[in-house]
Image 1 (cartoon, rainbow, N blue to C red):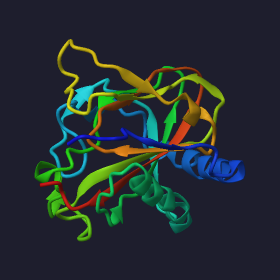
Image 2: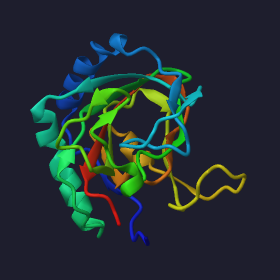
Image 3: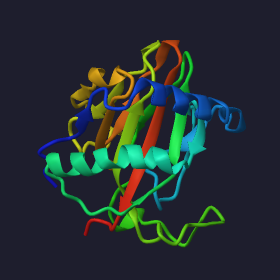
Image 4: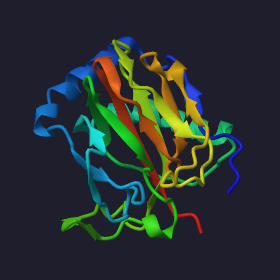
Length: 219
């Protein structure tokens, strides 16, 4: 698959008061989800794929936001990015929004959100839990990261320029940094199968929202 655009950015499109509201909702819930030390392996993305824990692969706190107004606000940008980027991929579902808090020393190492092919389809059950019927048979196609604040240093969001590089070898490809999205209310939409990371936060606290949009798998 040849991608004309690896990602699509929108700058300062979500009002600051709304960003602060999201932070307030998310931070009140993060104590329920303590810092994660085991996350999915580089070779196992999200979606329906089997997750394999790797100690220290991620250091952050998360909670989940399901308010409909948040989806109503963000999803039109997913549609616009999907069209303007030239992807034009079919998608029709969205998982719960993940609020993430990275404190000093927090990070998320190289990973991808889903393979987006038949190997990444959501089954009927996963880890002993029922999967929502409207997710079953779908894959993570488009990922979204929304920046909520800028009172931090480090924490750059980076994407590999080579969508087929598996990051398991010593060969390094160019990392694309998106500094403009460090501005609150800015977001980036990108294919879920691209490797990406959040660099370590060196000062302050980084808050963000992540969404995964689902659709039929690529053949």
